Length: 433
Ligand code: PLP
Image (tube, rainbow, N blue to C red; front, side, top):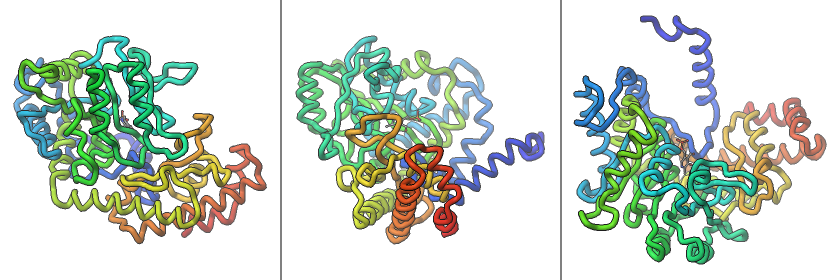
């Protein structure tokens, strides 16, 4: 048995380069974070060798004595991290990712062609919440189910609950999905529950982006109102890459009382094979951390940092979607300064700032979105505080101003723009700073 460096120098070197990129950049991608050494250790452990189809105590393979204990610990910790009563809530910790968690949740409660309503992707929703364009059903959630997305208000950027309610009355969904990938404001779960109840619909929250904030009590609690809650484990929650499905256990005889069996069957055997036990161990470690007092401080810092960036950008005169943030992300509308999100992403890459272009409400083309998404989960993991984030906003402002200047001479084509950036002295200076 040799080390990776000896066995495969090519891959080893690329991993070292990526490690350096992560270390030397300002990481502002709202869906990313830096997980702990302990999580990494569990994730890269001998557990990766094991097959364990089924659930603890009921596996299709032998040799699962320790794997069963790990998965049980993970389930207990998942409930503890979100203060859930095990007689009222259960959890499946096997989904390989957020997308498979969502599809398994849908498989559990829906029949093919059932009607679903989720937040539209250009309004900040996720692909898996029923995304389709006018020409194509993109996500399997739109291929296998009938999807009518709801939107944010095109002037304020806030969710338009009145329109959602009116459309739900016409569409009569079987499931309403809340949760987003790019929505900087809070959710009104009570209102959504009321709308769902008008049609006997399930209410599911995909809290992927904000689950760390929910665990840290820095975001409203979706568990009070939802039947199902899914999440990824690697965003604000700071674990390995995977998904979880929480399901409400109703008293026997009540409408949704069989959710547990349905969810478990949907994950395995319907959608997945053997669980990734190494990942489940990593999730267990992350959930133990998420239940700690330090994590609550972390979640608070994530929000404070996002507010600091939002306020500083507004101070420079920029426009933000919903004029600010109450969570871990800021959506910066660049249309008012005549820049596309793609161009801002390019210049940021060149000056060691990693973020992503993002649709902002009212965008007419998904290919050239009008904004960028900025998240603070990773910055807070690296101990950056509000004052540091004001500095980060200054870097972003400088990058934006350079991009505007360069665009004025290079023209609108992105390849000419990138070439001009690469030879720009302003870019070199900003990279050095
Ligand atoms: N749900 C939401 C709200 C997300 O933002 C994402 C990913 O960014 C997912 C689900 C999908 O997670 P994964 O990439 O692990 O499949």
